[in-house]
Image (cartoon, rainbow, N blue to C red; front, side):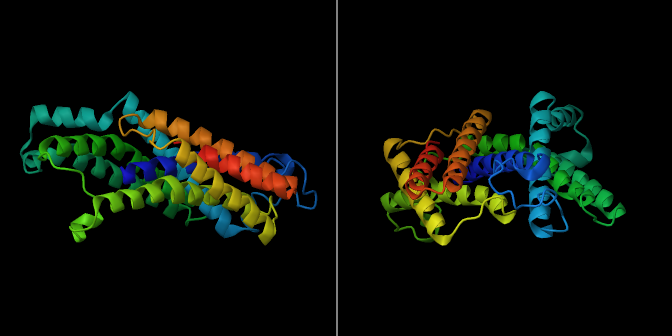
Length: 293
C-alpha cells in the first residue's frame, strides 16, 4: 500500500508540474505571478541557458509523466501486452515454456520496456543528447513503466491469492519480529498521512521558486509552512481513513491531482498576498486539502 500511495502521489506531482509549466510558458511568463513581479525578464521562464538544471529536470519529469500516462491509457484501451501473452499461451512455443508460469506477462512487459528504452536512447544519441531531444530517453522510460502498471497489478493479485492467510505485517517486522504492530502502524500513518503530503507540496513549489516566479523570505516561508503543518494535521484528524484503493487507480489519481492543484493554488495565493495572517490561513487550507486523500 505504501508503494501504491507513492505512485499516486508521484503521478499527481507530475500532473501539477505540467500545469505549472504550461502557466509559466504563457507570454510574458506571468502565469503564476499574475504580473506581480514585473522585473522578471519576459524570455526567462523556459530558457535552458538561464536555468539548465531546473529546466532539464522539469522537462525530463514532464515527458516521463506524459509517456507513463500515454502507455497506461494505451494498455487500458488495447492491452497489447496482455493480448500478446494470451496469443503465446495458445501457441506455446518451446522458448516460451522455459519462462516462469506466473511471471510470463510481467517478463513480456519488461521486454517491451527495454525495447522502448533502447529506441529512446538511440534517438537521443542521434541528436547527441541535446536539449530538448534527449527527452526521448525519459519519455521511453515512462512508456515502459506505463506498460508495466497493469501486469504488475495482476501479478500482485496472483501473489495475494496464492499466499496463506496471515495477519498483515510491517516491513520493519521482517527485520525485527518483536516490533509492535501498533507502533509500526502509527509510524506508517505519520509518514503517509502527514510527512508525505508536506513533502509533496514542497516539491510542487520548487519550480516557481527556482524560476523566481515566487520570491519569499525565510519568515514568509516559515509562516506558510507552519500553516501547512497545521492544515495537514487537521485534515488527518478529520479524515482518519484514507480514500485510496489499489483497485481504483484512475479515480484516485484524478482526486489527488485535483486536491494537489488546489493546494498549490492556495499556497501561491498566500505567497503573493504578502499578508502574514493570509499566508498562515492559505497554508493551512492548502495543507488541509492535500491531506484529504
